[in-house]
Length: 285
Image 1 (spheres, rainbow, N blue to C red):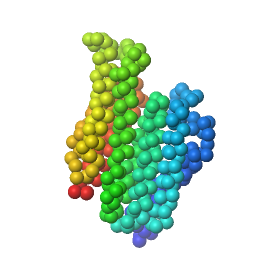
Image 2: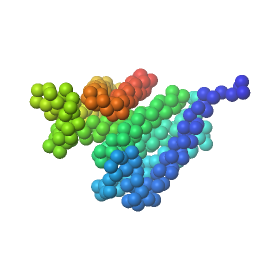
Image 3: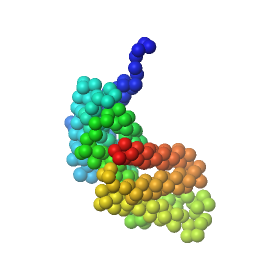
């Protein structure tokens, strides 16, 4: 036992867990029909949906293919023992990135269906998978140019829909959602501000909408490449964290402890994305 080195082995149970869950879920999505897809879309949902847009079907199949691809890549990584220090971990890194892409795409679908519980859990899932990716990258000093250029693109995608969709709802579809917000905060001091609750909700919507605008500009400037400054991407992350905290404040005012706590989690996990981006960037410079 004294000679047993746990360090290179600690990631193995997680990789095995990803293999099983990615395979089972991916196979179920791929071979299941509408009923199976509805089951996945209704996880964590308070009010179950009975249908979904037609374009979700190819997205579900794409999610399944990505999960099965992740399964194959991770199995190869385990067979090749890529978990050892300074061992080239190409299959391991691509396996985790495929997992990240599949979870981010799944999160996109539930977010647009306003399944907030599932969207939040999948957001956290993506960040934790980036933590696993960071762990592998710390042990593998063999960098791939293609991998390095695309590995943070899922972060752009996830932030875009996480912030953009609720912002769009508050600004463009305000007539549909404002009544619910007004009722929610009717007994709080926020409803007694000049103009009522509407200016507060609109200001949050503007902050949320600013994030996808900054992300688009960041993509245009190719900030996902490590030779580029990430100023716009950093600003989008800062606005995301700030918005989550403002929303947490709003829910705390009405004593919605679970909702406020969930938003604090969003903020902290977004900080984790920032830490991953700059940790990886420092290592490539």
